[in-house]
Amino acid sequence: MRLNFKNPKDSPLNLMRRAGYGFAGQDEATGELNFTRHLSGGDYPRFHAFIKSDGDFVFVNLHLDQKKPSYRGARAHSGEYEDSALLEKEAGIIKKVFSD
Image (cartoon, one colour):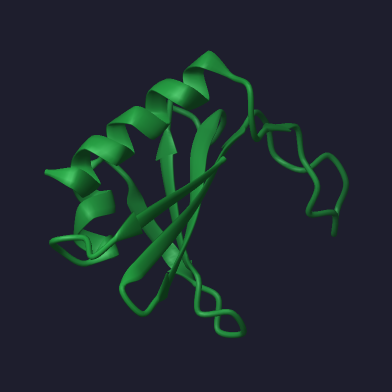
């Protein structure tokens, strides 16, 4: 699920922390910031967001990781990217934090 914000009032790092996300690093090649928020005491399921800034815009790519990758070296995992009530609710939380 992709979310777009123009001229947020604070840095993406601070806004995502307010939404309950932890910073998980930055991709050196793309410059994307990586954030996660766990739904339980374990590592999965978790919300996973990649954020990229471009001028006045911040782009958030949000999905729900259901479990870790099944095979060593594999990046693919069981995830939800669209059409999920849980994902829609989470997107609403992020939208509220970015617009306040």
